[in-house]
Length: 320
Length: 284
Image 1 (cartoon, helix red, strand yellow):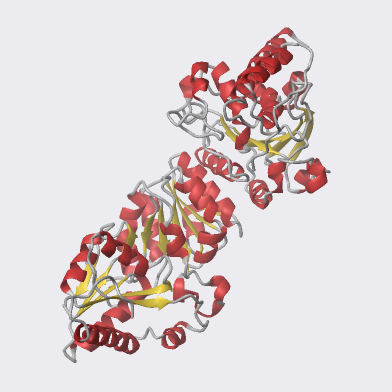
Image 2 (cartoon, one colour; image 1 turned 90 degrees about the vertical axis):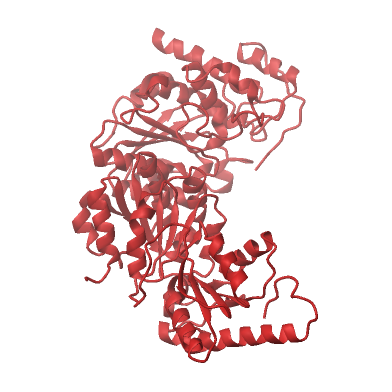
């Protein structure tokens, strides 16, 4: 089996569907071969994110499916109002690919840290949000995302992993490990280390359910509710601010369904992360498998203490 | 003026009448509407290869109204061209219809919504680019405000349009000299505007935006230069057609009393100007 490749997957789609056009605001890292392969259907507008998104809306008005590329933070923030106003209000099928989101910005520093991209893109009615856990999942999902009539924001992740995925479906989570002690909800880059952390805990008798949500909009509410009902404590893991990200998304759903379970957020609490190479960032911020296992273990232990000191069932979501 | 252009004068007067009737019970952006009324009448009657029957035709010409607050002039023009009955304008600002202060696609003939300044040039460029890709005959026109040229996205888009050689694209600047509250030259001077646009790689012409003969000449050759987008700087007057409020900075958004509407309609028809008594209202 050949290694999955975003660029090849996108090229195959473009070859099969003449409506597909590829745009970039001079961000070519993931699509270096496409200018030659696509000819005039590859458009580099220069470092002009707003113009690129506006043009994508115009192309979509003419029946095209534009797939646009820029660094995640500049795409979602610099061009936000163009995304909201031109793509969002009209509900046009523009596919927005944000490069190096979250921890993947590595040593670039806070200017480049898209750790609020989920928050802002979630606020656009009708916008789909896809957070691939690895390049294989990204490639599996691409045909359905491109075929959807809705706009979609993709947190680009072209890293390889050893995960074996179930077939992709928008709004459908996949359960990567079963367990009823800790229920971990994650999406994107951190899914592989979360799964490894779950395996570490299993060896010491703690059963961890690992759910890869894959799309945060539409989100698989059923999978979240089932995990909440099954597990003693829920943990959300994200390389995003706790404001507006996965943690809040999960809490909203639980409260709306009046399911009161402890939810422990693991993410960025009101600060940018310390820049560095990815492996070092993960270690510094506490997201290696061993560190995550430890945080899950403590989340479960805190829940045990809470139950021991309380004569009534836990009321409301509590946050460790 | 040739007789066929006289017909446009009458039509433009009717369009201004529609706009004045919208400037009550909530009001509208009358100043910007009256400055571009002649432009829109001319474009729809003499330039655009489009009609109510061709709204789904991919080979039609496209017009995008980027400075969306002048939509009363567009509504009036579209009514006069038969896109929808003028009776619909009685729904202006009603929540039961979609005829509000900015354009949207629920109104037949409106290609895209606007209101946030600095957007539709890039949207129009996407349309123009696709027309190039398929080798279509359509041309794309964008009406922008001069105040709108404060927005950085306009200049960014102009760089890209020139780089991509979008010569099927024409921008018409409604150069009425005012932005919301004051003269453009008092806040962020634009002149020499033609030189600026030319330096960005556009082919530029300056024209009196109220002179149909001059407009006919300006629009007669497009693109003005192969490989370059065209810019037509139309020198216009805020509230053109109503001498009592022409060129008045405070009469941008107006909300008139019903008697004032009748007064201005009479003035439009040639009656002597009378001073308005209602307060100026600026919304921004």
